[in-house]
Length: 299
Length: 256
Image (cartoon, rainbow over all chains, first blue to last red; front, side, top):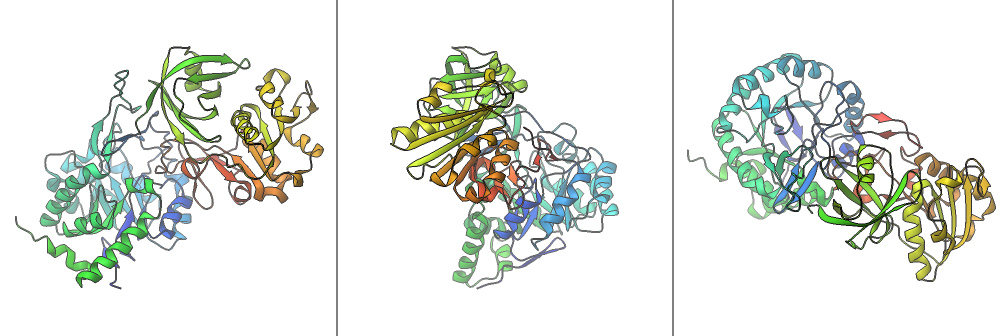
């Protein structure tokens, strides 16, 4: 069988299929379960300075083509969370801590308080006031936050980018200038659903982020543009639910992929994707690294 | 699924703080399954079914207090039925419940009885005024009642009723109630844990098995989709009865 091992953004992963931020990442036990089910790496739920309960419900809505969520960054605060990271690390796969803050200084303070295998900076959540894409849509802030965390952390720093912008490459360049070891694209697309019986917006927060199959073509385009223009690696996320989706994302230029919404089908999704990728590479007599060159780069 | 629109057909006051709401939708739930009830403009909360088209609710917070303000003709959003409910096994079963947690057991007992299964019930309340569904349980078969204050039946906690029962007689035991009451029963009946199905709760947000807020330590059991009914021998190896996570994910005490 072909090797699925990858060296991406300062981490060595046994396979390129990771658990995405915000999915089953609240506890060390659930992160470890994802790793034992075959994830090549796991990303925690986004962690901030202080405990947050998140938005009132409904926090998710299933729509025709995917899932809308507005969890609202619930988390116990970074001081409480290292013990969950420690449990997750017992799985043996790299554990990436997703963190959020409202300023470069806050990001840096959280980074100094945690010991994961890498950080992923949430500069892209579309539905939390003062956080996420409210900073992450400004290239100068992306660069400043990235630089501040790089100066405070002794592990790799990845930056998760928002697609809710006119030019994601500009944001990717800002992360690269700030010293990021990789970019992760994309976070959810800002979206909304309304209950037609009553006119109420369904999400407790009214607005949320769309994930799942609907966003995959947007994610593939973003990954392709970023990989064509950056020197640092790109990790692809957005609607990956099968090995075919993963292969497409890798062909777009991603060095690894993350899986989120597809976990509603169960933890088996990791093994389905890695087994499918292996068989595909075998059938095509290709190595994993060959996929990145197959889509071509026609700028 | 998006929330379905359910019209409240009837509201029954069971006690001063517990009401039953009957909807115009029969969602064909199994006893032990739950629905996410959307009280529009307030919150979405998980509720166990007390029959095919009813939920029975104790007023404990903002969302349930607002729900109590709704009468017949009002509407709610509803996602469900969700999760894995109780599974009937064998021909002689025991129901053990406490407080409003007896609601799914009444529903289960009625299904069991109509299938010809022999049903015994042990249900406990703080006081006689807090008792619900007495006639439903009486019609199922043998009934033992406990009250904490001794105002009715056996004086003591639900576990006090275990002394009057030989648990080895039952092919399966079904448990629902406050966590510490359930823990008390499971601890005292641990030799029978392999045949106790417990309906538990954790902090549910997504109810789809993706947000992770309801995962149990140490194996990451996803209560919202793999539960809420779980075998007690699994609970004995978990956080259950010792601690639970709240809305932030912080670890806190068990209630009840």
